[in-house]
Image 1 (cartoon, rainbow, N blue to C red):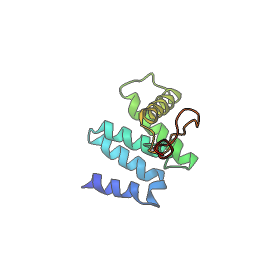
Image 2 (image 1 turned 45 degrees about the horizontal axis):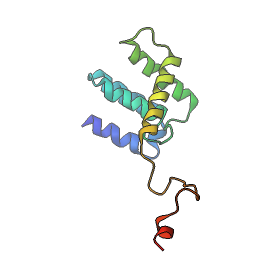
Image 3 (image 1 turned 60 degrees about the vertical axis):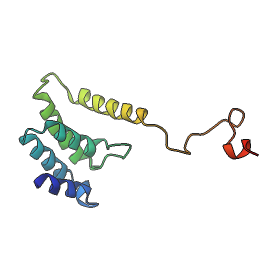
Image 4 (image 1 turned 90 degrees about the vertical axis):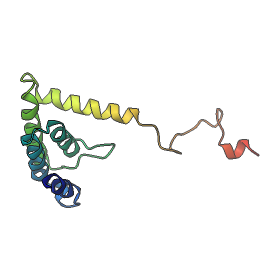
Length: 122
């Protein structure tokens, strides 16, 4: 399907950095009434997803994507500004990060409070 082809493109190491690939994907989803998918496409391109950095690094391409994303979101909220959208997206992504449990072994411990299990078992 076309959606699968877009997914392959945005996961390609070279193509995924090209803003027009993401824009085309988002517009394709939007034209088919898949606004939530389009939203996720914009977010993945512009701010990253699940802790990954933004995929589109070029400032001009990034600006075009933000404007297209804003246009889509203004269909349901005409008062929405670009600054409001950017803030909302970044806040949502930060909240997702805050809800993730820390990776095993990544939590530093205070030597005085908790020793590693290997030391306690001796």
